[in-house]
Length: 301
Image: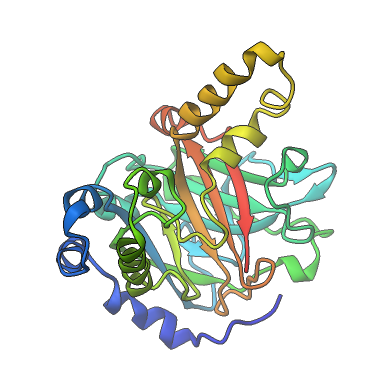
């Protein structure tokens, strides 16, 4: 996996530059968006920003990206068609709880993320099984270091990095349906784009849970709904088309970002051409702690 140009110290120190809600609201009020100011302010969502710092390993049940996972006894290593998935990261829920302003994540247990880092699926319906998220309500004493299967390619084994959390306010991308309904004129659209640029969405190493994603190729909610239920939205009678499209639009809005994993020189992860992985989950599934229906999208420039 290729290295990004961001240094280890740059990524770790970036936590000092993360915008909180008051920063973003203040910026909105001076952005030239007077007509839609209140509406844009209503789009602000807090996320849990994840910064990485390389370490030698050896710590068990810590929040980290890369390295080897610490899994509960009896937990099988996720695979697809006999091929093991790459371990992406694990998060100890109590580490993140102070930064979960919505209180939508479990405050106990651990969560693990896996992905087919060799084939790097994009998130089409045929890619199902190319990623896996696991949540278990277990304590740190109930997990143990787990070596990857011997047939996991070396290029799919990433350098361990400790995860540090902070709260970061986010805004949706310009292509989001949340922004499109505002009917921004040209000047407002330019101001909103500048606002997003100030938030730094084009930087590397932007890992997060919850909030709005830092999109590269546009919104993903409709892709998650369409591909996860394929071929439901592909084949229907002509008189069902209007209802089916309306259902797609409505159900797409129920999807929300669970986790964004960026290309990162610290871990050695690079997705496509300096792209990002986005793990999405339906809101009802998140509330029920059911992560089996997580859908993944890969975007890159």
